[in-house]
Amino acid sequence: MKKILIINGPNLNLLGRREPGVYGSRSFEDYYKELCTQYSSVELSYFQSNHEGALIDKLHEVGFDVDGIILNAGAFTHTSVALHDAIRAINAPVVEVHISNVHQREEFRHHSFISAACRGVICGFGLDSYRLALEALLHES
Ligand code: DQA
Image (cartoon, rainbow, N blue to C red):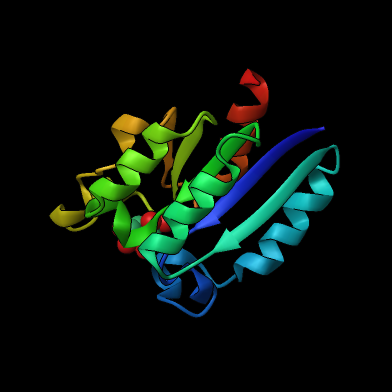
């Protein structure tokens, strides 16, 4: 069984209530349940934190064991060299995911510090971005 971890960064615990016009009105927990049912042959797990260090600790903890990581680093995408380094430090391929199309938004969201360290990037497909990232990882591993 393939092991894939989904990691969500800051403010993504508020999905469903946070700016629904941008991020939709569905909670991640609800979406994640559906994803687990749809991909019952995959060992999926989920972690969320609002703290940069906790995200880095989680990457270190699982990054040599799982088959892939789907990472929505939220705003840390646009600020964090430390996350870039953590992704480079581990073995598991990481797919960077964004719910919104960051390139259609404010200019400060156009640059990602983590893309260059990631296997690939999926953005702009709403919550379906996570499923597309999962498909990409399953296709490769
Ligand atoms: C986001 C886009 C980021 O710019 C933002 O800071 C987020 C969510 C997205 O999923 O669209 O928190 O990563």
